[in-house]
Length: 263
Image 1 (tube, rainbow, N blue to C red):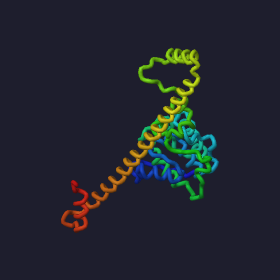
Image 2: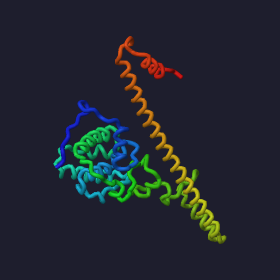
Image 3: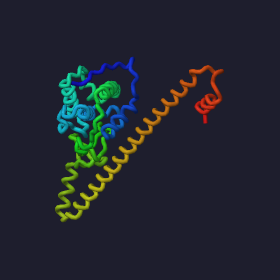
Image 4: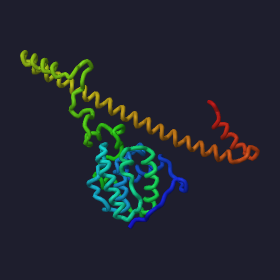
């Protein structure tokens, strides 16, 4: 039976979202960049397996998905495991699956307390347990192209769909007319050449999409670092300001000069 924990944001010293994400990624060797990505439920399922091996069918967990149906399935497995372990905490499945920050952040805060109360320190191979399945980038806006092929969603770049040119209507009549002309003049080579150009265009689109994804991730990393160091500066400022002006030594004055400098 698991140890139940009771958690309120008003009475408990909480970790920041940066610290919580770092803990999840360190424990599971995953690549989550946002708290919202935990809406997939996969991380909670595997963290339960870390604490209570075999408490849920890990092979059924969808580790790399951006489909809400899979989110709900993972979260239900997670909740069933909690129920079997006599944990009184209810899981807000519907709210978590929507991927909103506040819902996922508050639940992750509780789960970290629950984990600390129940983890016994045994060794665990997270990648081996999930057969090296990638985990992270679980929402549509952050899923990498190389991972999109593992999801059930359609419409991703490189999925075989034709890219429509500007000025086309539905393109059907124009394509049929062109195919008739190629057939009449023995245009097999021309058709192959056109197919080759289409493949190159799709490759180019895939490459650009990958670059956009990487830049998005870099921006998120910068924003996380900015927030982290800003909070540190605020803590330092508050600490210094606790002392009266006449009681501050030369070191404190120099720190304040650096912090408040405009250049």
